[in-house]
Image (cartoon, rainbow, N blue to C red; front, side, top):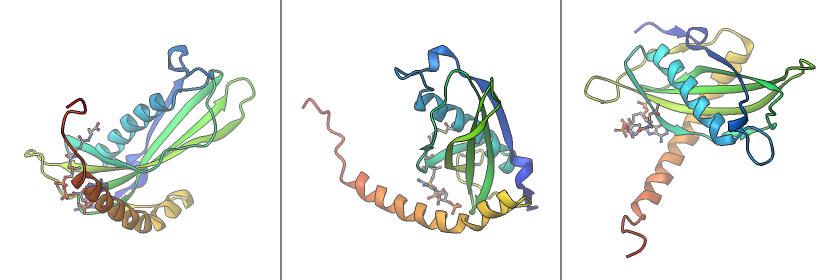
Length: 171
Ligand SMILES: CC(=O)SCCNC(=O)CCNC(=O)[C@H](O)C(C)(C)COP(=O)(O)OP(=O)(O)OC[C@H]1O[C@@H](n2cnc3c(N)ncnc32)[C@H](O)[C@@H]1OP(=O)(O)O
């Protein structure tokens, strides 16, 4: 399977901040942004795997670094930064740009893990990824460590799930 360049998986979405997407503090709702990240990351994953279905397996912490205001333009960038057998790590970078001053700042970052599925909804192998720019090379070189932590967290979560009740809370 031929490796794909990170740039080929890069999705860029520019957006305005709509009034209905604001919270009580007049900044963009975190949940609204998370939905946008998931949508961009899906396109990055599918561009890499070239299959019909790529599902979100997990999301690492979403880091809300700076609030996003209504006067900002929001630019979401997502691209594949690391791959396993069937899984893909997608990095999302959100830049808020003040539309009056033009000042740009990193507002949010997140890593999401997607899994490519075949026609029978089973995990299917994905191509390797090739980093080209300095930013891409840094993200790739630190990917193995993040993958290890994720594996550990998955196991921890399995232990938690094994202890969860599925009884109706009111019984
Ligand atoms: C775009 C959307 O909105 S999709 C909707 C939300 N997402 C979903 O509904 C997905 C629901 N979950 C699932 O279908 C399954 O749990 C799957 C497909 C994610 C994993 O299926 P499993 O049968 O557990 O597959 P398996 O154990 O073989 O793991 C497949 C790969 O996923 C990775 N993986 C599975 N769960 C996780 C997780 N929580 N975090 C990170 N990676 C994970 C595995 O490490 C493995 O990677 P590799 O192939 O690169 O080694």
